[in-house]
Length: 210
Ligand SMILES: [Zn+2]
Image (cartoon, rainbow, N blue to C red; front, side, top):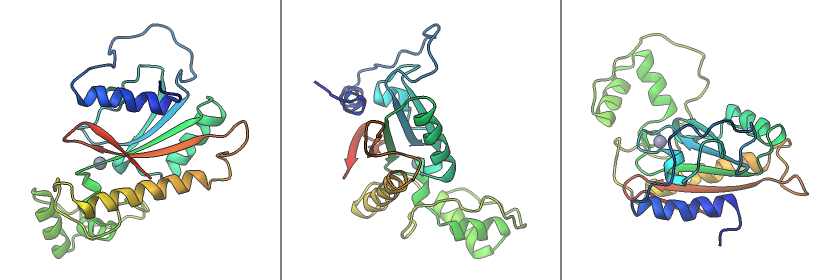
């Protein structure tokens, strides 16, 4: 029997990957504001992931925080602090995934491309398989795109040891950022737990990052 909300999500995920649908999509009626499973999920915005479906959670069960990469940014930390201290969540799940677009560029490359550097626009066009249209102007924001570290690979490349390690490294970085934050308690009666996963978009399965 699963003992935590996260374990229960893992059990649901195995059933989802086998073709079972657990998320009920209809309006559940009036519900309390606090997430019923006391869970906060940070995940990539990738169109191939439906977080409620792949974890088998229902409307009202969890906070779902999504951005490009599922990266633990300042804004994600902001959300997690509010989620825990005001809305009583105590389990955090981070989800990166195979074939993530954040493996296909670097921050410097995208900035240079947007600013109109011809070599960068050419490389971005090749990596994404679409013509990259530069804006030919500079901007102070966003300060970072948080592309995953390591050598970029073409968009949607098959999984291999190198890209799994790049994904795992960012999951571990995110977990460390949460666990070391002074406003996120990890010991005592108010402690939160954090676990990190890579979702395989081809199999539908979550794999834990240790
Ligand atoms: Zn992604």
